Image (tube, rainbow, N blue to C red; front, side, top):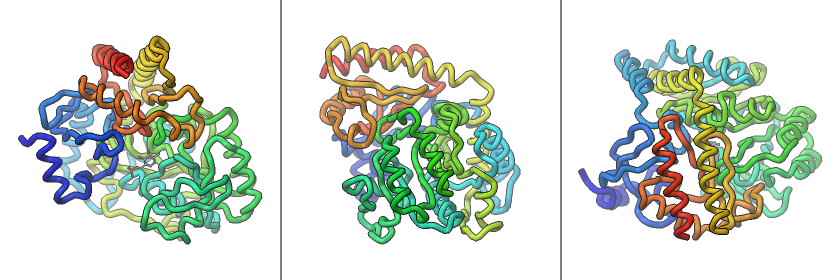
Length: 425
Ligand SMILES: *Cc1c(COP(=O)(O)O)cnc(C)c1O
């Protein structure tokens, strides 16, 4: 078996940057990424035979840890029947019933193959349904690599978007209004200025692709009210938070009903899946019933459905969320008490099994706040943790995840590593 460094050299010759998704390349923390040859429970085994306690959990999906026997058996059973049919299959119906039961705002759903596809289709649907073009998104919210959503910021609250990535036409970016998160007034002002042009608002209700940010009290309700008032579609992108913070996502926790929701990650049980869903009246605008086209050769794939169904049922039938919350609280306590002990500025936003560490005292409420946190300190902290057998996300902007496969011994051990890594700063 080759070592990580050899594999990375070979990969770089044929794959841009040696990776199939950029953050895996360790560019922001520096160093060479490790390759994983297998994963079990809460442990990754690298190509260099190092065992790591995993707090990335495949960037969110692995809420049951890796290679869970129930999910593996479900996939194996589906595999015995064939991998793809190109016709409707029974798993799709079971998945739809499960999702609609577990997430109250969902009346109808459409399965796709990734979170990106889900958000791409959701904004197309919002536009097709309202016959309007403009979409409001918020700085620092990530919705996959959809052209019109891959836009961070213009200067000033009402500036129309500048593309974040090369290859996105300005004319397309101009249809995206980018506003700071947690500032309801700027959203109200946008509605005033573009009154009849706004098809919808898309947001991560807890932005978790710039660390972890919570909405101010009344903010989500304010967005709900503005959308209702102006006939715009409110889209909660819960690809990350869905089934992570609770079975019904942030919307259930906060008691807000969006018009459309996008989900992914956990609902695939480790296989590639996304879904959009919401009000039947809106969803029925999708082809073949309505004029908004959307399709997928492998959508509703039986293996992915079987893995997802097994994963959701495990969450439904256990006290997983209580256990996850306890472990999350323990990590938060370990880190914040160490920060206090050594007098280092920092904070650790946490909800259930999701947390991040910001190296700043200033409360982080939006992208600017997250950007202003100390990067060098984070990068040093990351490498110390990794060197001591704990893998956290290789960027200060990514959320950390705990799985039901983490056990008390592993969490205790990781808390020691976190504390010592902080002391070493
Ligand atoms: C990961 C993520 C996406 C994109 O999902 P992919 O499956 O990577 O395309 C979209 N929105 C949010 C909030 C995400 O966290």
